[in-house]
Length: 96
Image 1 (tube, helix red, strand yellow):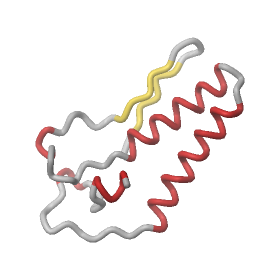
Image 2: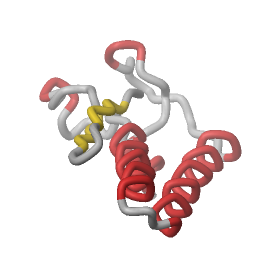
Image 3: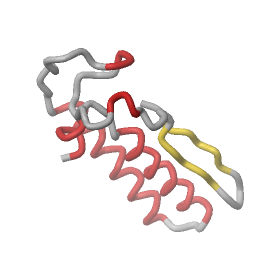
Image 4: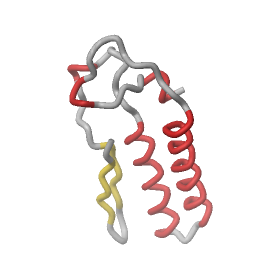
């Protein structure tokens, strides 16, 4: 998973970095975690940019939620191979 940080003092861009992945569309194997973490990074930047602690708090809540899912929920192995060495956690299970 990866999330790009292109931030400056006045503007910022946060985006998941994995491409559109048309080869896995509809297979329930895409990992939405980088998209979720990108929003957390944006909220953290907004907290600094606008001096609003509520944005920092929301970013921390997102990070904790992702950690909880990763650390405490087990997912079954897929029956078919997963592309590009991705982890074995189904999109629908991660996004639920």
